[in-house]
Image 1 (tube, one colour):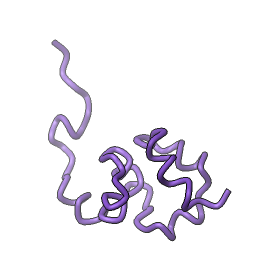
Image 2: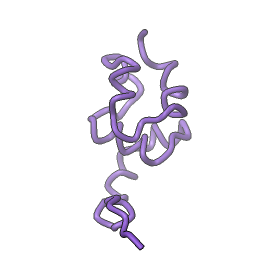
Image 3: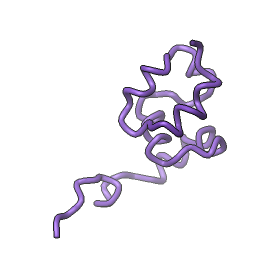
Length: 77
């Protein structure tokens, strides 16, 4: 049986730190990996998305199709 290399699974991620910062994304029902990706990129509010394209967001590790569908409405095309 192989051990996961995921930092969250290994318990090396401070989930409380993210919980203090990802409220906007939690309210939009984004999955945890997408919320962490946005926070790690310094995207903490919907207005922060104005300087990003969909391809910028898609390039972030943790942003998948569902997150892109939710965020699409806030990104300038």
